[in-house]
Length: 216
Image 1: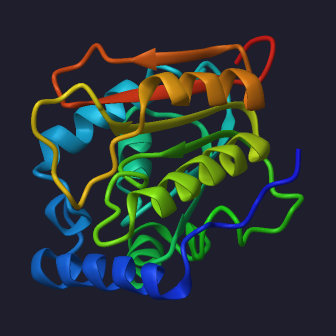
Image 2: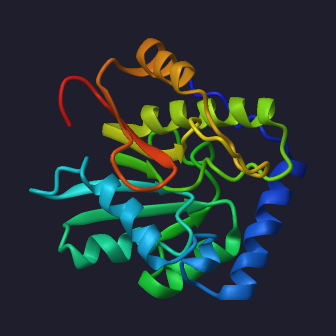
C-alpha cells in the first residue's frame, strides 16, 4: 500500500499550527496547552488507548501529534519498556517534548514526513484528527483517511486513534465527526478486517484500534 500525502494545504496547516501555538502560549505545556479540557480527560483517553498495547515486553511507539509527549509520561508511570518517538506539526510542541524527556524524544513534522523505512510496533494519535478548525469537512475527511492509512502502514502491531462520535444532537463546527459506517468500510476494505471500535467510555468520542493480522 502506498501512503498518500496529507490532503490539507500549507495555509490550512498554518492555521492549525497557529491555533495550537496560541493554546501553548496561554496555558504552557499542560493538558489545556494541548487543547484538552483537563488532565483527567486526557488521561482517560490514554487509559483507553493503552488497553490495546501489549505491555508485557518492550515495544516501540510513534505518537502522531504528540504535543508535549504527555503520553510518554503516562507510559513511564506505568513502567512500560517503550522506545518512544513523537512527531508534531507545531515546532514548539516538539521542543517542549525534547526539553522534558531528552533530545530525540520528538521531531517536528507529521506521519507523512518520516523516513519511509520508519516502522513502530504501535502508532497512536490522541486528539490529532479532531480539530479541523476552519478547514472544510470534505478536505479534512481526505486528510483523516490518509493519516489513518499512513499510521497503519508504519505499524507492526496496531494503529490506534480516537475521533469524535457522529451520533450526537449537537456538533461543534471546529471539530470533525467521521461517519461511523464509512469509517468501518474503509478500515475493513483498505486496511484490515481485525479492528475494534471502542465506544465504552464516558466521552463523546470513540477509540479505534486497527490490528495488523493476525494478532497484536
